[in-house]
Image (cartoon, rainbow over all chains, first blue to last red; front, top):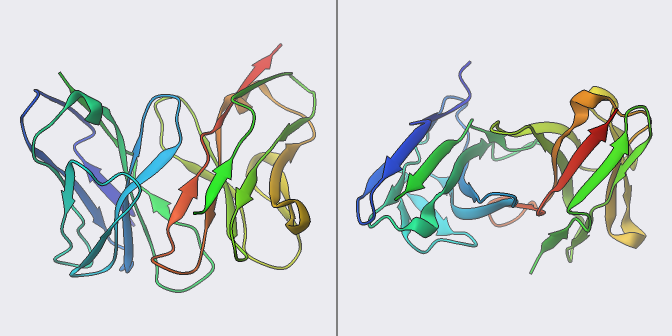
Length: 113
Length: 114
């Protein structure tokens, strides 16, 4: 059982470039989330989704876009990369019901230069 | 808006000493509560969680936490710290509404001295 898989693990972007961070889960979870973690800080919620076709903004959505065309996938898009988006990005998922925590991927370390 | 406060940015304890990491939350309803640990360059590992019932919960690696509703706190404890416990610790809360979003504190860095 792979759980939550993020690709790539590392990426260096130039200012103004675009990229998509991939996130896939194989647990049939309804809820999925994207977080960013800046050095020495906690995780901040960027976007989340409660099911295929439904997304909503979190605390820090500016500069990002998401889509949820399937239950399994929740890609995060950076259209015009800026140095302020240098961070570690975590994807997570959880089921709709049940007393359980969110399950996290291993993260994508992104540097914008 | 909901928030999580970890008042201590970093804490240093001697190996074998006891540990308490503080966490306070601001929520209008009964939250779900979590403690995660993160080693440098690594992902998040769940230490323990509280949803309901007994307010003292046991987790992995010998950690425990106590939920105190009157103080809006969920402090993490360990009776005897090991050098391998050095890491960043995050308290988090979630509400079972609006997508079950989990909100994280800023973290407490634990240093363990020999």
